[in-house]
Image 1 (cartoon, helix red, strand yellow):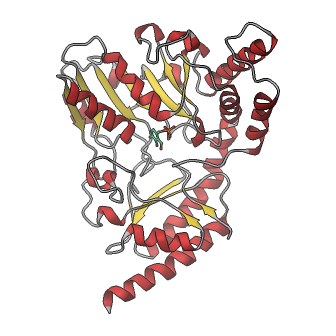
Image 2: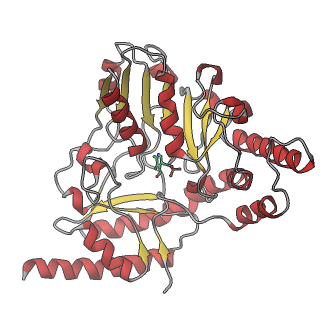
Image 3: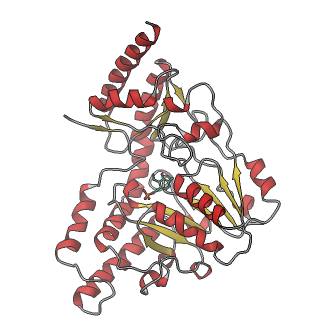
Length: 378
Ligand SMILES: Cc1ncc(COP(=O)(O)O)c(C=O)c1O
């Protein structure tokens, strides 16, 4: 069966040039980048070249890039900035990815800290007035995501002047923004950001924590001297080379998102609305590829399972510790009552998708929804 992959916010297919660029580092140049011999030096050169390329793709300095295993690890590490703080005050948005929410909750339950959630409005946007109210008192760590993984909403957090005072450290989870929105790290208000390779058609298991002033961050994995002693462990050179190759394609990917992916998403949304779907964050500034939707009285899991039978891959709510896995936590936090959190489905496109795939999906979706509605009225 042919498959149609509409789950690109969860991961993306590796680009074939990216894949090819990695091969020599499995087969021929397999030295440890810390070794002082010819193969070690080959790996070290590849490591530093890759760091340069990734830095260029987000307008950062190479020495600000620390390779990690991905977004989750980078988001976990950032809580190290609180290592020496007494009774810290932490602010996070209510729609952060579980790699921030669960880490923050875990930290708060093991230490005497004040953890405050900044709510979002019905469009899924952080309520800036409430944020600035909370920022009238000093906060040690502020974590706000750039683009929401479920709705694709771009958070209004780029104005430097909004974040100039009363913040010890401002971390931004930019995992879903990378490759969908230009990132200009030097001119953004963040002290650190997380990025991940597998969201931009690179390999899985590699990402970075990008830190404006690394001298302010204690080591987060201790051992050898790798990554300037902040994140010890032998570097995965094939993955890092692949990550850099994918990052080099970001500009053309951004163009493609704007010109091709946006048309597909708008086409799909128009037809879904005609079918009676409710689109989350429809009136907000969103990335071009994401459509988070649901039909009244139709379970998202059942719809997913039916579409899966036709080889169409989408996703329902993200796993979140205090909700059932198929409930969409973002919908709950947005305060939307028109549809059930269990009805929500996320469709996320990539540069690999076509209009034919969208039409096929829409036809199958219409059939399935019509059948469900008939069953409800029987
Ligand atoms: C917003 C956001 N942050 C963090 C992550 C975790 O990234 P990784 O899969 O690289 O650990 C994801 C993955 O879906 C995400 O969407």
